[in-house]
Image (cartoon, rainbow, N blue to C red; front, side, top):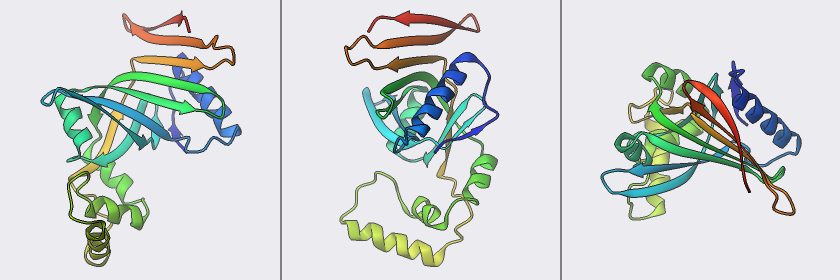
Length: 198
C-alpha cells in the first residue's frame, strides 16, 4: 500500500487517488510497485527498475534505496526520470515525468528508525547491485549485520528519493483497443488537460 499524506487537491492528484482507490477495491496485488526509468549521462544508457513507492506526501512521490546503487548514480547524472504504474485488475496505466531529488537526512533517519529490523538489516548489509562470489555471502553478511550493528541508525548510503511530476498520463484500457488517454502537463505554471488518441 501507499501512504497518502495531505494529498494535493490539484486535478491530476485527485484522479490518481480515484484510480488507486478503484485498484484497492479490486484487490490489486503489489499496488505500490512503480517502474522508474532513468538515464545515465556518463554511460549514455537508459535503465528501468521496479521499486516500492512508500508515500505520496502532498505532491511528492517517495521511495527509498541505496545511494550507491546504479539507479542513484544515474539520478545524479541526469535528474529527469519517467515513472509508471500499471494496475491490471482495473486495466489502468499511469505514466509520469519528473525530476528527482534525495530526501533530507532527517527524513531518512526518522523513517528508518520506524521500519522493521529485518528491512534495516538488509539496507545496512547490502552493497546493492555490487558483484559477489556467491549468494551465501549475502546470507552471511546479513546474519553478521543482525548480530553486530545498531539497527535503528540510518546509514548515510541509504535514504529516500522524491519526485514531483510535471506530467501525468492516465491510460484506461478498452477491450476494442479504443483506449482512453488523458494527459495533464504543466504549462505556464498551470495544469493543461489534453486528450490523446489510442
